[in-house]
Length: 484
Image (cartoon, rainbow, N blue to C red):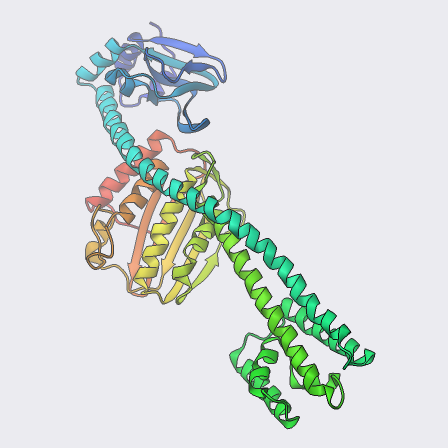
Protein backbone atom coordinates (compact mmCIF):
# COMPACT_ATOMS: atom_id res chain seq x y z
CA UNK A 1 0.00 0.00 0.00
CA UNK A 2 1.33 3.45 -0.88
CA UNK A 3 1.75 5.83 2.00
CA UNK A 4 1.93 9.61 2.32
CA UNK A 5 5.49 10.95 2.91
CA UNK A 6 4.00 13.13 5.70
CA UNK A 7 3.24 9.97 7.67
CA UNK A 8 6.98 9.45 8.16
CA UNK A 9 7.08 12.54 10.41
CA UNK A 10 4.44 11.05 12.72
CA UNK A 11 6.69 8.17 13.72
CA UNK A 12 10.20 9.64 14.06
CA UNK A 13 11.51 6.52 15.82
CA UNK A 14 10.56 4.30 12.88
CA UNK A 15 12.58 3.81 9.74
CA UNK A 16 11.09 4.40 6.30
CA UNK A 17 10.70 0.65 5.86
CA UNK A 18 8.99 0.26 9.25
CA UNK A 19 6.53 3.07 8.47
CA UNK A 20 5.70 1.43 5.15
CA UNK A 21 5.30 -1.93 6.88
CA UNK A 22 2.92 -0.38 9.42
CA UNK A 23 0.85 1.28 6.72
CA UNK A 24 0.67 -1.94 4.73
CA UNK A 25 -0.89 -3.75 7.69
CA UNK A 26 -4.01 -1.61 7.67
CA UNK A 27 -6.39 0.44 5.59
CA UNK A 28 -6.19 4.22 5.23
CA UNK A 29 -9.62 5.78 5.74
CA UNK A 30 -10.51 9.41 4.95
CA UNK A 31 -13.56 10.86 6.70
CA UNK A 32 -15.26 14.25 6.74
CA UNK A 33 -15.72 16.52 9.74
CA UNK A 34 -17.96 15.32 12.62
CA UNK A 35 -18.38 11.84 11.13
CA UNK A 36 -19.21 9.12 13.66
CA UNK A 37 -16.63 6.37 13.29
CA UNK A 38 -17.61 4.13 16.19
CA UNK A 39 -20.76 3.91 18.32
CA UNK A 40 -20.87 3.23 22.04
CA UNK A 41 -21.76 -0.43 22.52
CA UNK A 42 -20.40 -1.64 19.18
CA UNK A 43 -19.26 -5.27 19.24
CA UNK A 44 -16.78 -4.93 16.39
CA UNK A 45 -13.61 -3.01 17.16
CA UNK A 46 -10.79 -1.57 15.15
CA UNK A 47 -7.68 0.30 16.13
CA UNK A 48 -7.37 3.75 14.57
CA UNK A 49 -4.11 5.68 14.19
CA UNK A 50 -4.65 9.37 13.42
CA UNK A 51 -2.67 10.49 10.37
CA UNK A 52 -4.36 13.84 9.78
CA UNK A 53 -7.06 15.78 11.64
CA UNK A 54 -8.20 14.64 15.06
CA UNK A 55 -10.29 11.99 16.74
CA UNK A 56 -12.75 12.91 19.49
CA UNK A 57 -13.42 10.24 22.12
CA UNK A 58 -16.54 10.66 24.28
CA UNK A 59 -19.14 8.69 26.21
CA UNK A 60 -22.62 9.16 27.62
CA UNK A 61 -22.90 9.67 31.38
CA UNK A 62 -26.29 10.38 32.97
CA UNK A 63 -27.81 11.58 29.66
CA UNK A 64 -24.89 13.97 29.12
CA UNK A 65 -21.88 13.65 26.86
CA UNK A 66 -18.51 13.51 28.61
CA UNK A 67 -15.33 14.19 26.70
CA UNK A 68 -12.73 11.49 27.34
CA UNK A 69 -9.85 12.47 25.05
CA UNK A 70 -8.70 14.13 21.82
CA UNK A 71 -6.31 12.12 19.66
CA UNK A 72 -4.16 14.10 17.25
CA UNK A 73 -1.78 12.91 14.49
CA UNK A 74 0.51 10.14 15.73
CA UNK A 75 -1.91 9.01 18.47
CA UNK A 76 -4.26 6.06 18.35
CA UNK A 77 -7.43 4.63 19.88
CA UNK A 78 -9.25 1.33 20.15
CA UNK A 79 -6.42 -1.10 20.86
CA UNK A 80 -7.34 -1.63 24.52
CA UNK A 81 -10.92 -2.68 23.81
CA UNK A 82 -9.80 -4.64 20.79
CA UNK A 83 -7.63 -6.84 22.98
CA UNK A 84 -10.18 -7.26 25.78
CA UNK A 85 -12.99 -8.00 23.28
CA UNK A 86 -15.52 -5.93 25.20
CA UNK A 87 -18.20 -3.72 23.74
CA UNK A 88 -17.06 -0.25 22.89
CA UNK A 89 -17.59 2.11 25.86
CA UNK A 90 -16.89 5.21 23.72
CA UNK A 91 -18.00 7.20 20.71
CA UNK A 92 -15.29 8.03 18.16
CA UNK A 93 -15.91 11.10 16.03
CA UNK A 94 -13.73 12.97 13.54
CA UNK A 95 -12.78 16.59 14.11
CA UNK A 96 -12.20 18.27 10.79
CA UNK A 97 -11.29 16.31 7.72
CA UNK A 98 -9.47 13.32 9.12
CA UNK A 99 -7.30 10.56 7.72
CA UNK A 100 -6.96 7.37 9.78
CA UNK A 101 -5.05 4.12 9.57
CA UNK A 102 -7.50 1.33 10.46
CA UNK A 103 -6.02 -1.90 11.89
CA UNK A 104 -7.96 -5.07 12.69
CA UNK A 105 -7.44 -7.38 15.67
CA UNK A 106 -5.06 -9.73 13.89
CA UNK A 107 -2.79 -6.89 12.78
CA UNK A 108 -2.71 -5.38 16.28
CA UNK A 109 -1.86 -8.67 17.96
CA UNK A 110 0.94 -9.27 15.46
CA UNK A 111 2.31 -5.78 16.08
CA UNK A 112 2.38 -6.39 19.84
CA UNK A 113 4.13 -9.73 19.43
CA UNK A 114 6.91 -8.17 17.37
CA UNK A 115 9.92 -6.45 18.86
CA UNK A 116 9.96 -3.05 17.21
CA UNK A 117 9.94 0.62 18.25
CA UNK A 118 6.24 0.82 17.42
CA UNK A 119 5.33 -2.26 19.45
CA UNK A 120 7.30 -0.85 22.40
CA UNK A 121 5.39 2.42 22.12
CA UNK A 122 2.12 0.54 21.79
CA UNK A 123 2.78 -1.51 24.93
CA UNK A 124 3.84 1.61 26.84
CA UNK A 125 0.62 3.42 25.95
CA UNK A 126 -1.38 0.26 26.68
CA UNK A 127 0.11 0.07 30.19
CA UNK A 128 -0.48 3.77 30.77
CA UNK A 129 -4.11 3.62 29.68
CA UNK A 130 -4.74 0.57 31.83
CA UNK A 131 -3.43 2.44 34.87
CA UNK A 132 -5.40 5.49 33.86
CA UNK A 133 -8.65 3.54 33.63
CA UNK A 134 -8.07 1.98 37.04
CA UNK A 135 -7.16 5.33 38.60
CA UNK A 136 -10.13 7.00 36.94
CA UNK A 137 -12.57 4.43 38.27
CA UNK A 138 -11.31 4.87 41.84
CA UNK A 139 -11.37 8.64 41.52
CA UNK A 140 -14.81 8.59 39.92
CA UNK A 141 -16.24 6.54 42.78
CA UNK A 142 -14.86 8.99 45.34
CA UNK A 143 -16.21 12.00 43.47
CA UNK A 144 -19.55 10.29 42.91
CA UNK A 145 -19.88 9.70 46.66
CA UNK A 146 -18.92 13.31 47.36
CA UNK A 147 -21.32 14.55 44.69
CA UNK A 148 -24.22 12.54 46.10
CA UNK A 149 -23.56 13.80 49.60
CA UNK A 150 -23.24 17.40 48.40
CA UNK A 151 -26.35 17.10 46.24
CA UNK A 152 -28.41 15.69 49.09
CA UNK A 153 -27.16 18.26 51.56
CA UNK A 154 -27.67 21.16 49.16
CA UNK A 155 -31.18 19.96 48.32
CA UNK A 156 -32.16 19.62 51.97
CA UNK A 157 -30.72 23.02 52.88
CA UNK A 158 -31.90 24.94 49.86
CA UNK A 159 -35.63 25.08 50.63
CA UNK A 160 -35.40 26.06 54.33
CA UNK A 161 -32.57 28.51 53.54
CA UNK A 162 -34.66 30.21 50.86
CA UNK A 163 -37.69 30.36 53.16
CA UNK A 164 -35.61 31.75 56.05
CA UNK A 165 -34.03 34.33 53.77
CA UNK A 166 -37.43 35.52 52.56
CA UNK A 167 -38.81 35.60 56.11
CA UNK A 168 -35.78 37.57 57.35
CA UNK A 169 -36.31 40.22 54.68
CA UNK A 170 -39.98 40.55 55.61
CA UNK A 171 -39.15 40.61 59.31
CA UNK A 172 -36.62 43.41 58.81
CA UNK A 173 -39.32 45.51 57.16
CA UNK A 174 -41.78 44.75 59.93
CA UNK A 175 -39.26 45.38 62.72
CA UNK A 176 -38.27 48.70 61.18
CA UNK A 177 -41.85 49.87 60.69
CA UNK A 178 -43.42 48.71 63.99
CA UNK A 179 -41.64 51.14 66.37
CA UNK A 180 -42.38 53.98 63.96
CA UNK A 181 -46.10 53.19 64.09
CA UNK A 182 -45.96 52.90 67.88
CA UNK A 183 -44.28 56.31 68.16
CA UNK A 184 -46.92 57.86 65.94
CA UNK A 185 -49.63 56.41 68.16
CA UNK A 186 -47.99 57.42 71.47
CA UNK A 187 -49.92 60.40 72.91
CA UNK A 188 -46.97 61.35 75.18
CA UNK A 189 -44.99 62.70 72.21
CA UNK A 190 -45.86 65.91 70.45
CA UNK A 191 -45.94 65.88 66.61
CA UNK A 192 -42.58 67.67 66.53
CA UNK A 193 -41.05 65.19 68.96
CA UNK A 194 -42.32 62.24 66.92
CA UNK A 195 -40.92 63.70 63.71
CA UNK A 196 -37.48 64.20 65.29
CA UNK A 197 -37.42 60.73 66.84
CA UNK A 198 -38.49 58.95 63.68
CA UNK A 199 -36.08 60.95 61.54
CA UNK A 200 -33.22 60.22 63.95
CA UNK A 201 -34.02 56.49 64.03
CA UNK A 202 -34.15 56.23 60.23
CA UNK A 203 -30.88 58.14 59.90
CA UNK A 204 -29.09 55.87 62.40
CA UNK A 205 -30.43 52.57 61.06
CA UNK A 206 -29.79 53.58 57.45
CA UNK A 207 -26.23 54.59 58.31
CA UNK A 208 -25.70 51.27 60.09
CA UNK A 209 -26.95 49.40 57.02
CA UNK A 210 -24.50 51.24 54.77
CA UNK A 211 -21.63 50.12 56.95
CA UNK A 212 -20.44 53.50 58.27
CA UNK A 213 -19.82 52.15 61.79
CA UNK A 214 -16.13 52.29 62.63
CA UNK A 215 -14.56 48.82 62.92
CA UNK A 216 -11.63 50.12 64.98
CA UNK A 217 -12.03 48.70 68.52
CA UNK A 218 -10.22 51.62 70.14
CA UNK A 219 -12.37 54.24 68.45
CA UNK A 220 -15.48 52.20 69.25
CA UNK A 221 -14.45 52.08 72.92
CA UNK A 222 -13.87 55.85 73.00
CA UNK A 223 -17.27 56.45 71.42
CA UNK A 224 -18.95 54.20 73.99
CA UNK A 225 -17.21 55.98 76.90
CA UNK A 226 -18.31 59.38 75.60
CA UNK A 227 -21.93 58.21 75.23
CA UNK A 228 -21.88 56.66 78.70
CA UNK A 229 -20.59 59.90 80.23
CA UNK A 230 -23.26 61.95 78.44
CA UNK A 231 -26.08 59.59 79.46
CA UNK A 232 -24.94 59.53 83.09
CA UNK A 233 -24.83 63.33 83.15
CA UNK A 234 -28.49 63.26 82.14
CA UNK A 235 -29.20 60.63 84.86
CA UNK A 236 -30.54 58.16 82.28
CA UNK A 237 -31.27 54.78 83.94
CA UNK A 238 -29.46 51.75 82.44
CA UNK A 239 -26.90 54.05 80.82
CA UNK A 240 -24.29 51.25 80.88
CA UNK A 241 -26.62 49.04 78.76
CA UNK A 242 -27.73 51.74 76.33
CA UNK A 243 -24.29 53.19 75.53
CA UNK A 244 -22.88 50.03 73.83
CA UNK A 245 -26.02 49.68 71.67
CA UNK A 246 -25.81 53.27 70.47
CA UNK A 247 -22.04 53.05 69.93
CA UNK A 248 -22.34 49.87 67.82
CA UNK A 249 -24.90 51.67 65.64
CA UNK A 250 -22.42 54.47 64.94
CA UNK A 251 -24.06 57.09 67.18
CA UNK A 252 -21.80 59.64 68.88
CA UNK A 253 -22.45 61.82 71.91
CA UNK A 254 -22.02 64.95 69.78
CA UNK A 255 -24.74 63.78 67.40
CA UNK A 256 -27.20 63.18 70.25
CA UNK A 257 -26.45 66.57 71.77
CA UNK A 258 -26.96 68.38 68.48
CA UNK A 259 -30.13 66.52 67.64
CA UNK A 260 -31.88 67.44 70.94
CA UNK A 261 -34.24 64.54 70.92
CA UNK A 262 -37.10 65.62 73.12
CA UNK A 263 -37.44 67.92 76.05
CA UNK A 264 -38.17 67.45 79.70
CA UNK A 265 -39.94 64.35 80.95
CA UNK A 266 -39.93 62.62 77.53
CA UNK A 267 -36.13 62.58 77.23
CA UNK A 268 -35.73 59.19 78.93
CA UNK A 269 -38.63 57.70 76.99
CA UNK A 270 -37.18 59.00 73.72
CA UNK A 271 -33.76 57.44 74.37
CA UNK A 272 -35.36 54.12 75.38
CA UNK A 273 -37.43 54.17 72.21
CA UNK A 274 -34.32 54.86 70.14
CA UNK A 275 -32.44 52.00 71.84
CA UNK A 276 -35.32 49.62 71.12
CA UNK A 277 -35.41 50.55 67.44
CA UNK A 278 -31.64 50.05 67.10
CA UNK A 279 -31.68 46.71 68.96
CA UNK A 280 -34.53 45.27 66.90
CA UNK A 281 -33.05 46.46 63.62
CA UNK A 282 -29.62 45.03 64.50
CA UNK A 283 -31.12 41.65 65.43
CA UNK A 284 -33.18 41.53 62.24
CA UNK A 285 -30.10 42.35 60.18
CA UNK A 286 -28.12 39.64 61.96
CA UNK A 287 -30.78 37.10 61.01
CA UNK A 288 -30.86 38.40 57.45
CA UNK A 289 -27.07 38.21 57.20
CA UNK A 290 -27.04 34.66 58.62
CA UNK A 291 -29.68 33.39 56.21
CA UNK A 292 -27.88 35.05 53.31
CA UNK A 293 -24.70 33.30 54.40
CA UNK A 294 -26.50 29.94 54.45
CA UNK A 295 -27.87 30.58 50.96
CA UNK A 296 -24.38 31.51 49.73
CA UNK A 297 -22.91 28.32 51.20
CA UNK A 298 -25.59 26.20 49.55
CA UNK A 299 -24.89 27.88 46.21
CA UNK A 300 -21.13 27.41 46.72
CA UNK A 301 -21.65 23.75 47.60
CA UNK A 302 -23.66 23.18 44.43
CA UNK A 303 -20.99 24.88 42.31
CA UNK A 304 -18.18 23.14 44.21
CA UNK A 305 -19.60 19.69 43.46
CA UNK A 306 -20.79 20.72 39.96
CA UNK A 307 -24.17 19.10 40.48
CA UNK A 308 -26.15 18.38 37.28
CA UNK A 309 -23.28 19.60 35.08
CA UNK A 310 -20.97 17.87 32.64
CA UNK A 311 -17.87 16.56 34.33
CA UNK A 312 -15.58 17.87 31.58
CA UNK A 313 -16.14 21.48 30.63
CA UNK A 314 -14.67 24.95 30.45
CA UNK A 315 -13.70 26.02 33.95
CA UNK A 316 -13.11 29.41 35.57
CA UNK A 317 -10.17 28.68 37.87
CA UNK A 318 -10.87 31.72 40.06
CA UNK A 319 -14.47 30.64 40.63
CA UNK A 320 -13.33 27.18 41.71
CA UNK A 321 -10.81 28.68 44.14
CA UNK A 322 -13.41 31.05 45.60
CA UNK A 323 -15.98 28.27 46.07
CA UNK A 324 -13.34 26.18 47.84
CA UNK A 325 -12.48 29.08 50.15
CA UNK A 326 -16.16 29.51 51.00
CA UNK A 327 -16.53 25.82 51.80
CA UNK A 328 -13.41 25.94 54.02
CA UNK A 329 -14.28 29.21 55.76
CA UNK A 330 -14.77 27.37 59.07
CA UNK A 331 -11.05 26.53 59.13
CA UNK A 332 -9.82 29.84 57.76
CA UNK A 333 -11.64 32.10 60.20
CA UNK A 334 -9.70 30.75 63.19
CA UNK A 335 -6.62 32.79 62.32
CA UNK A 336 -5.66 32.40 58.66
CA UNK A 337 -5.61 35.54 56.52
CA UNK A 338 -6.15 34.99 52.80
CA UNK A 339 -4.28 37.10 50.27
CA UNK A 340 -5.49 36.88 46.68
CA UNK A 341 -3.09 37.75 43.89
CA UNK A 342 -5.23 36.85 40.90
CA UNK A 343 -3.81 37.56 37.47
CA UNK A 344 -5.84 39.59 35.01
CA UNK A 345 -7.37 37.97 31.92
CA UNK A 346 -6.83 34.40 33.12
CA UNK A 347 -8.46 32.20 30.44
CA UNK A 348 -10.90 29.43 31.17
CA UNK A 349 -9.45 25.94 30.89
CA UNK A 350 -10.92 22.64 29.71
CA UNK A 351 -10.92 20.43 32.79
CA UNK A 352 -12.80 18.25 35.25
CA UNK A 353 -14.00 20.99 37.65
CA UNK A 354 -15.09 18.67 40.47
CA UNK A 355 -11.66 17.04 40.50
CA UNK A 356 -9.86 20.40 40.38
CA UNK A 357 -11.85 21.58 43.39
CA UNK A 358 -10.61 18.49 45.20
CA UNK A 359 -7.05 19.59 44.35
CA UNK A 360 -7.65 23.09 45.78
CA UNK A 361 -9.27 21.58 48.88
CA UNK A 362 -6.34 19.24 49.57
CA UNK A 363 -3.70 21.94 49.08
CA UNK A 364 -5.50 24.63 51.10
CA UNK A 365 -6.31 22.18 53.89
CA UNK A 366 -2.66 21.09 54.06
CA UNK A 367 -1.53 24.73 54.10
CA UNK A 368 -3.83 25.52 57.03
CA UNK A 369 -2.55 22.49 58.95
CA UNK A 370 1.07 23.45 58.20
CA UNK A 371 0.44 26.87 59.78
CA UNK A 372 -1.37 25.36 62.78
CA UNK A 373 -4.38 27.51 61.87
CA UNK A 374 -2.46 30.81 62.21
CA UNK A 375 -0.73 32.59 59.34
CA UNK A 376 -1.02 33.99 55.81
CA UNK A 377 -2.37 31.96 52.91
CA UNK A 378 -1.50 33.44 49.51
CA UNK A 379 -3.26 32.28 46.35
CA UNK A 380 -1.61 33.54 43.19
CA UNK A 381 -2.63 32.94 39.57
CA UNK A 382 -1.03 33.86 36.27
CA UNK A 383 -1.11 32.88 32.63
CA UNK A 384 1.61 30.71 31.16
CA UNK A 385 2.33 29.58 27.62
CA UNK A 386 -1.05 27.99 26.75
CA UNK A 387 -1.55 27.24 30.44
CA UNK A 388 -2.82 28.64 33.72
CA UNK A 389 -0.57 28.56 36.79
CA UNK A 390 -1.90 28.53 40.36
CA UNK A 391 0.34 28.94 43.39
CA UNK A 392 -0.84 28.15 46.92
CA UNK A 393 1.63 29.53 49.45
CA UNK A 394 1.62 29.24 53.24
CA UNK A 395 3.79 30.67 55.99
CA UNK A 396 4.16 27.40 57.87
CA UNK A 397 7.27 25.67 59.12
CA UNK A 398 8.06 24.13 55.73
CA UNK A 399 8.70 20.60 54.47
CA UNK A 400 12.11 19.09 55.29
CA UNK A 401 14.26 18.74 52.20
CA UNK A 402 14.97 15.05 52.86
CA UNK A 403 11.29 14.10 52.42
CA UNK A 404 10.25 16.50 49.66
CA UNK A 405 10.63 13.80 47.01
CA UNK A 406 8.22 11.52 48.93
CA UNK A 407 5.27 13.79 49.64
CA UNK A 408 3.30 12.58 46.59
CA UNK A 409 3.67 8.92 47.55
CA UNK A 410 0.40 7.26 48.58
CA UNK A 411 -0.02 6.84 52.36
CA UNK A 412 3.04 8.98 53.11
CA UNK A 413 2.16 11.67 55.63
CA UNK A 414 3.93 13.94 58.09
CA UNK A 415 0.80 14.43 60.17
CA UNK A 416 0.32 12.68 63.54
CA UNK A 417 -1.24 9.24 63.47
CA UNK A 418 -4.99 9.50 63.02
CA UNK A 419 -4.81 13.02 61.57
CA UNK A 420 -4.25 12.13 57.92
CA UNK A 421 -4.40 9.23 55.47
CA UNK A 422 -1.49 10.29 53.26
CA UNK A 423 -3.72 10.21 50.17
CA UNK A 424 -4.47 13.92 49.73
CA UNK A 425 -1.32 14.81 47.78
CA UNK A 426 -1.37 11.48 45.95
CA UNK A 427 -4.88 12.25 44.67
CA UNK A 428 -3.81 15.81 43.87
CA UNK A 429 -0.89 14.52 41.84
CA UNK A 430 -3.03 12.03 39.94
CA UNK A 431 -5.68 14.63 39.08
CA UNK A 432 -3.16 17.22 37.92
CA UNK A 433 -0.77 14.95 36.00
CA UNK A 434 -2.80 11.90 34.94
CA UNK A 435 -6.15 13.56 34.30
CA UNK A 436 -5.13 16.98 33.04
CA UNK A 437 -1.60 16.55 31.67
CA UNK A 438 -0.40 19.30 33.99
CA UNK A 439 2.54 19.77 36.32
CA UNK A 440 2.79 20.15 40.08
CA UNK A 441 5.94 21.62 41.62
CA UNK A 442 7.07 22.39 45.14
CA UNK A 443 9.43 24.82 46.79
CA UNK A 444 9.68 24.91 50.55
CA UNK A 445 11.67 26.65 53.23
CA UNK A 446 10.80 27.62 56.82
CA UNK A 447 8.21 30.39 56.58
CA UNK A 448 7.22 29.77 52.96
CA UNK A 449 5.95 26.64 51.23
CA UNK A 450 4.52 26.93 47.74
CA UNK A 451 2.76 24.37 45.56
CA UNK A 452 2.64 25.42 41.94
CA UNK A 453 -0.02 23.84 39.71
CA UNK A 454 0.25 24.33 35.95
CA UNK A 455 -2.76 23.28 33.88
CA UNK A 456 -3.11 23.38 30.08
CA UNK A 457 -5.82 25.65 28.68
CA UNK A 458 -6.89 23.19 25.98
CA UNK A 459 -7.73 19.50 26.54
CA UNK A 460 -4.42 17.73 27.15
CA UNK A 461 -2.99 15.51 24.46
CA UNK A 462 -2.00 12.02 25.44
CA UNK A 463 1.57 12.80 24.40
CA UNK A 464 1.61 15.72 26.87
CA UNK A 465 0.36 13.48 29.67
CA UNK A 466 2.99 10.86 28.88
CA UNK A 467 5.65 13.55 28.81
CA UNK A 468 4.47 14.85 32.19
CA UNK A 469 4.58 11.34 33.60
CA UNK A 470 8.11 10.80 32.27
CA UNK A 471 9.18 14.08 33.88
CA UNK A 472 7.59 12.99 37.15
CA UNK A 473 9.42 9.66 37.00
CA UNK A 474 12.73 11.53 36.59
CA UNK A 475 11.88 13.73 39.56
CA UNK A 476 11.08 10.66 41.67
CA UNK A 477 14.46 9.17 40.77
CA UNK A 478 16.26 12.34 41.72
CA UNK A 479 17.28 13.07 38.13
CA UNK A 480 15.30 16.30 38.22
CA UNK A 481 14.28 18.61 41.03
CA UNK A 482 11.11 20.46 41.85
CA UNK A 483 11.54 23.99 40.55
CA UNK A 484 9.32 27.08 40.78
